[in-house]
Image 1 (cartoon, one colour):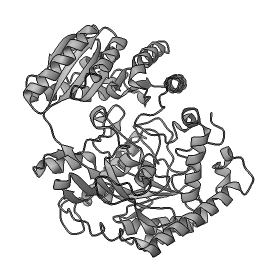
Image 2 (cartoon, one colour):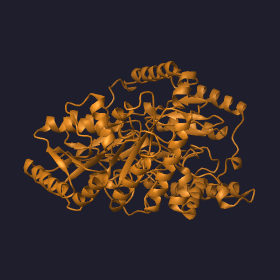
Image 3 (spheres, helix red, strand yellow):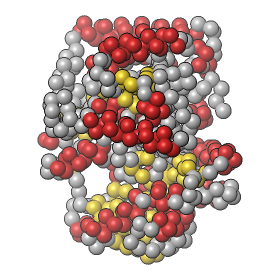
Image 4 (tube, one colour):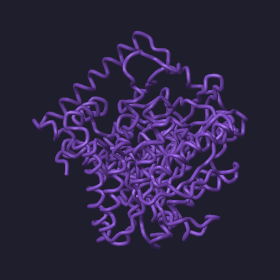
Length: 561
């Protein structure tokens, strides 16, 4: 199994390496003006009427399909109410795709490719393979794929950077089309004066910031994506939008559900292409259609272009301080945040993680085995950074904090933060051969001390190593449950369920940034209420009446567990 996975990854990497050159011959990132930016945005009255008409027809069809067997609303998205094509239909669809895309690298049924796209080492969910992988390079390509999927009633799943943690890109059990967006990886425009950028969905956030740095543009994109408990350098814009992601910078810059995505171009299940709004910084024209797709996990449309906001790069430094327990640490965070100092990130590593950092052997220092806060401080000058550091130190000491360190220079700041970034792999080293179940609860910041303290007490009784790390400035934390056997897995799942219900009882959420996928959908009714969940299903039925887009994800099953 391991050798097969390695071969698949190498094959996938080779495919990406072959396509680093654009069709024009320019290297990735060198073309900044889109031929499609203006082509789909001239809406005439006739177009508007067609859009409205198709929406009403789609809604009517969706309603009739959902209710044809007189099911109750909670059963309306049950799997048995959706009819997919047969094996013969899927074979015809694949042949049609091969005719539409004659390039041998565009349509793949290679077993290793199928395995790679239906499995992830980053989560514990079972692998489910797709029937075929297609690599589009344009919006028109995606339209063709969607029309073929509709013709043959074939499920269709978009695939981005493969850093999702809740099985969002798993295949459907009956097979389907996986649309790998990795070849739609061009930066189309950089509008420095407007602090925004237009990209295809396969562009990664790391690549965006690297490109801006190389061009000497003092801006960056602050919505970093998470993999387990550390930002994933391979996360791409399409997946980040679809999963409603955020990361360590959320305490200062918010999440993807803020205003960082100005507009998107998407292909709907009908094959229609829409652009959600213009590029202006703000708009009151109708409701915010862009946000309809943020967190929808590819169930409503496939994103093919996006305009993102950028923000100025400011000087930063790093501070570290230790505490006697997690309650004191999280209470200190609450008070620091209420002082309004320039905090870009604040991360908690518990005593188990700090011990792991020492054992991992990558740190240049030996840490005390104590619950620890890592602050990334932001300001316009050295003086403002030092002043913020003084405020943090004073508040930390009021809560029993000790060993406060403020980086003396940029290199020391990078070294301190590197230890935070190494936390995930340090944790895995605690139990060789283990797999990690990542959790993602989030609560109002005032309830975080109670949640972390109670969760840590609970985890100490289950016999599984489970270090805790958190983006505690916004009430979000992760426990990394390290399992080696089926019995460990069952114990861990029960602990995760208790953790989630504990967070929801504190007016929190089952997922702060990882999304729902197949791993958290059973908690949505408890968290959002049956009315809100049914509204989500109604929107899904209206836009995707055939239920082809990423089936089995996000929406709770008919009988929530």
